[in-house]
Length: 207
Image (tube, rainbow, N blue to C red; front, side):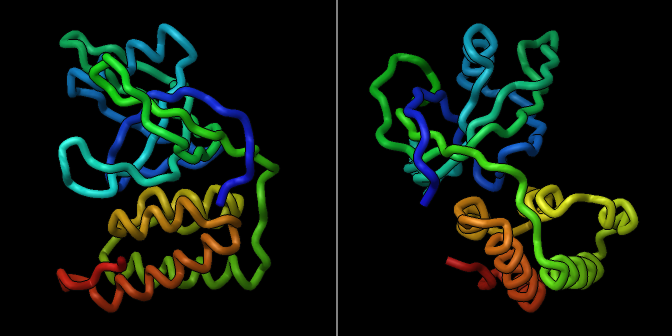
């Protein structure tokens, strides 16, 4: 459940596994014609794009109820019409209804969350997250600059892990929808333990 805010019309980019959080950044390579049109439209208006995960593999897919709107903070227009962009997260949103539009990209009416100040974790929560992250990364053979990780603030650490961790779509969505940073951190630890036990096991997915 997100905190109520203002109602907005958003162009949405359904992309499984791609999470955006307020105050975080998400680099994207835009190559499909409909999403190139969406970026061009956003650049001509308010530079905003709503990132949201597809709920299924239908065409077009159903969408999850919660996403995050971002502002195009950086853009590189390539010669062949593609774009490299970086979205800066502004606020989570709840989809109220999908709009009937003639654009090649989908649009929704959404309620934007009122974004508060950065949250912090208890010392024990931070320690548990770092310990489990090291275990998880070592188990998968990831090379991580742990000194740089230790310098991250709590919000950047938790949301950064949520963005890049190799969890399934449903797990990623649960992280996005977690109400507090503490709840998101605890869920990340649980998911790392779960996925660590099921590494290489195709049945190891959370629904």
